[in-house]
Length: 278
Image 1 (tube, rainbow, N blue to C red):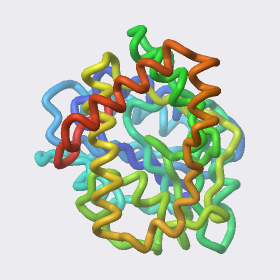
Image 2 (tube, rainbow, N blue to C red):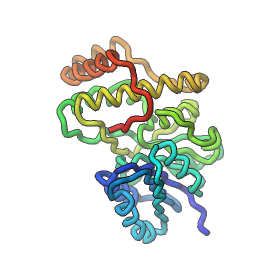
Image 3 (spheres, helix red, strand yellow):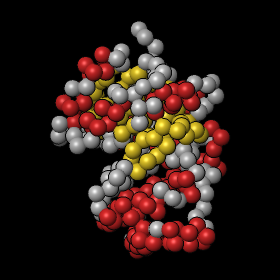
Image 4 (cartoon, rainbow, N blue to C red):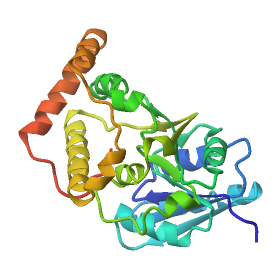
């Protein structure tokens, strides 16, 4: 049996609108990716996610890869991540949201970044996908300029670890923010952002932006309570008054929308539990 270099684990719940885009981009990868297995972990899907994903198996086989669909009756992203991990055989693991489209060189660059004996975390360069609503476009114009995002290795929707890195934790714990949990298991000098981009869709509309921002805040607060020691690895650049002034001058409409979302989030406590990110 061929050794698998990369296992790509894709949790998917009712993703028929996105799974074609995601898998087409994966199967269009170029460069030295090595042997790749793709595991689509469908969880409590009520749409065509399973059948659409299964339709890509011949295309994967044609390039010497494997694609399997795990059809779970129970829902939940953490459940799906753990089921994917149990089924995966690759030396390195790539965890990919089903609404992400990767640039063609991404897997090869991630594989190269992880091809060391020491623990490593890798991700691509995050690019916010074009939004349909003006509110989301305005919000994104500020968000992508935030120090945290510009600092790199954000890992929202796409992160990967090598075998030594995966040994940092056991099963995924039942937390809201799995991507933050994994990122904080690595020191800044262990986290790598490769040049190839991945395209991450932001939620559409003011109410959804507020809802997701509440979820993000709740996820960070939960991790601070459960795993306070992990925050020694944060190294997150703070948003200074000077940063705010520059943003207000450069993207005034976006700054107003970003500020209004921030205020709306503070008016109500964060929602408990996991919430879809779009």
